[in-house]
Image (cartoon, rainbow, N blue to C red; front, side, top):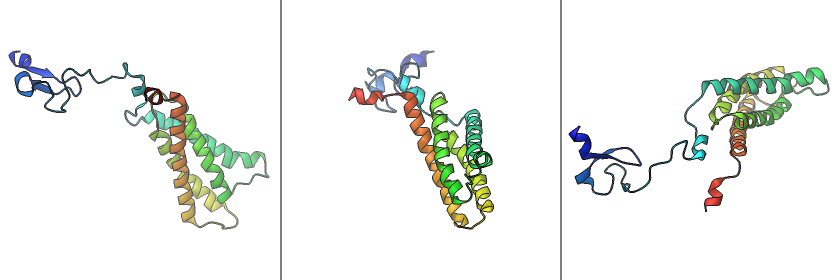
Length: 179
């Protein structure tokens, strides 16, 4: 108990500092003891939108959304409207905006920041989609590596879409008003 009276926790990093040796600054991070404490989630609403970690449940939800939208557009639409036969490169060119929209949807509906989950889900859907479109094309217009590149482009667009969805969910930036 006597030792706890001789130390003072830093308000910024929480490191224990001895009262006499460090003076007015933290020995660990160098902040002044008079500075206010670092804001928590409850104190700073903007912190609610920082990615805390990977969420398996949101990855599953993302996988469902990406799978359903991709299957509906690439497989289902040609079944309903035979004129739209998205085989090969046309199917890949259509899948990329679908993956962007699905990433944006997940970014809009997820609580907090969920950016990685739609990207992982899109990756898991993009590879079988590329394989299906490559093997199903009647006239070989693109080599296989182009399908892989277009799938990677689709994953990138999913990342951009999830970021855009998160920014729309957060609303106008408070950082612009603080300048």
